[in-house]
Amino acid sequence: MHPMLGIAVRAARRAGALINRAARDVDLMPVTRKRHNDFVTEVDKAAERAIIEVLHRAYPDHAILAEESGASAGNAGDSEHTWIIDPLDGTTNFIHGFPQYAVSIALRHKGVLTQGVIFDPTKNELFTATRGRGAYLNERRIRVSRRVLLNEALIGTGFPFRDFHGLDEYLGMFRELTARTAGIRRAGAAALDIAYVAAGRLDGFWEMGLSPWDMAAGALMVQEAGGLVGDFRGDSGYLESGRIVCGSPKIFAQMLQVIGPLAAKQTVLPNTGC
Image (cartoon, rainbow, N blue to C red; front, side, top):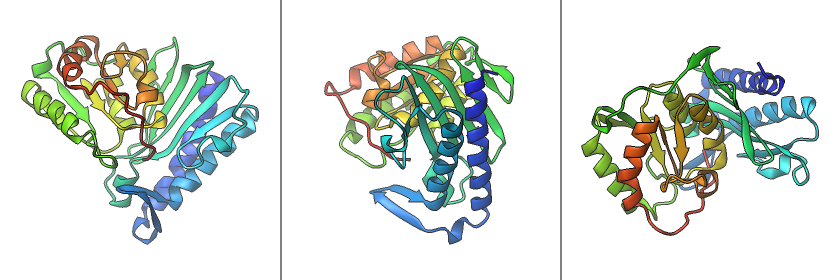
């Protein structure tokens, strides 16, 4: 395991332990509403602090881009390395006791994603990837699915839940893909959904309105598992636009044939959130 990936795994497991302890008493936990349908709990903040502490102890000069603290947590600016962190992706699920949420940590070096960790603490599933070295689930190599026909594919998605300006655009895509696939699944934690694409559990995934920390680690995993990742035009700007499509190569191409013509022309900036 690459040393930087090892540090990220240690940070993710520490955060996961905090989350699992908090899950036992989730009904007692204070919840703050950041904006419509966007919540933060004390465990989000505690998990993020724990992650940053581990990363900064090992790499004090690295920058941090994290959901709850933004870019202020690190020595941003001059560093060639930026850690992109979501301490608890799927906060709404966590609040309701719905066991689909994860810790997501990625490292970007000179603008290129190089390390990724997604840890599901409820299932003890650890997804990891290092650029050029493949993707793994609990240290076993994973690959995207071998399905080649969209009408046989199981596709993941996430409904718009904060900003509804693109709802009609999204519903057009949802309608078409519902009719043309074997099924659509919406589990509520984009990082895990994208990891599931890397592991072949989903054949593809698309969503809009995401933040970099929702996508970064999973995007690297999909690529290292033999899949493709892009925005709604198939281009590389998904971290900036918040619009992502990913899947096995043939399913990715067929999804873009459906999504591309329905995508609005304007650039949509990502929401920040869970």
